[in-house]
Amino acid sequence: MRGIFFVLIPSFVFSMNFYRTQIKIYSSSDWTVINLENASIAYCNGKEPEEARFRCFMDRITLNQPLGRETEVKNTLYLYDFNGNLKIRVRKGWIGVVKIVFSSKGKEVQIVNDIHRNGKNSKEFNVKIPYEAIEKEGKTHFGKLVLSFYYTWYGNPSGPAGRWIHWNSCGHNPDLGDINAAHHPILGPYDSASEYVIKKHIFWAKTSGIDGFVIPWFGENNHSYHGVLSFVKEAENQGFKFSFSFPFVDYDREVTPEVAADEISNVLQSFSSSPLFIRLEGKPAIFLYAADSFPKTFWGKVFRILKERGFYLYPFADAMGPSVIGEFRGLYFYLPIFFGDASFKTQEKYFKWAKIVSILKDMPLFLPVFPGFDKRKGCGSGKFIPRRGGKTMEALFALISSYGPDGIFASTFNEWHEGTEFEPSEEYGFYYLDLLSLLSREFKSNEKIHR
Image (cartoon, rainbow, N blue to C red):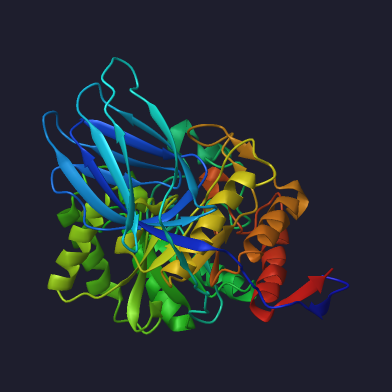
């Protein structure tokens, strides 16, 4: 690209006030929802009840249990965007009582919802709760990394698969030039296990500033497994880093903690001995997609099983709120898309929350950049976020840079069905890989690139 020069930009500084208070919830109702109207929850820390489901979100706490049970939950709340006065709305089932006690440094405040009538049984409170201010500064966890999600699930009749896979889904016919994608790969509808294709992908990734690929794992019995084996072999030949994500929410079978632990164990046994497997603090880094689709207790059991088997991990959660954070070492977002929000205001809310958690819990943070989204031709929703000649990507990069992440996820290298690919296409050529190359250099060098 022409006209490139560099200007040194200041180091990232994130200033925020954090607060801590203890909360004790007693409920004899089958469901309870506690909405915080004028404060946000970074995360909750405490033991989960055994026969009730307790969850924290950014703006509320929920507790669900069988009828006729009584449960008491004690947790520590970490708050932000809070001024000491808490506006709370407590809703519950039509039976039972909910008592909530906030405490800190020997002081406590109690509120009670004992309304019994049909409907929401809602009661509002405006209370000054006791709390403790927290001073915490963020730190750098590792050299800045740029990773990208890489799919190995494609097949064609002339490649190792011997048949069309994924390109022909949802009734498309690649033999007639009709593929399940809005755009067309410059390599054609390729086979993921092709050595030629993998070499091209790794070369393009390296030249665009991508340090490694994270491969979604669907199991040894899935057709994508052959692509995984071929990719890992070539990555080791070329010295290219890799790891795996686990989209358990998308599996075509029930995933229990035991099943999840088995799948993670299989990957670690097969691949984590490679010197190219991405590690943090000497531990294999893995990425758990849509982690908050499962309860905190699910992940607690998964990691306990893995430890019993001798596996010590650095697990990252793809999460849109604090419900599972306590079980993880890092945070990332795969593709936080909110259609109709061209200004990224909704994403900004989640990125801010993630940055706060990363500081409070000393967790590394990856934030995403994507060129656009186009599922108008693929299976499913037909939703669309235009690329705007790179402006969508640049606006998102500016936003994530303002939160100083430890790493960036280029989401994605080759998810063609959703039109998020950076991989070169007939429609856009190498434009988005070239743009990613510039932005990666800017991210890693802390220099603003004018072009």
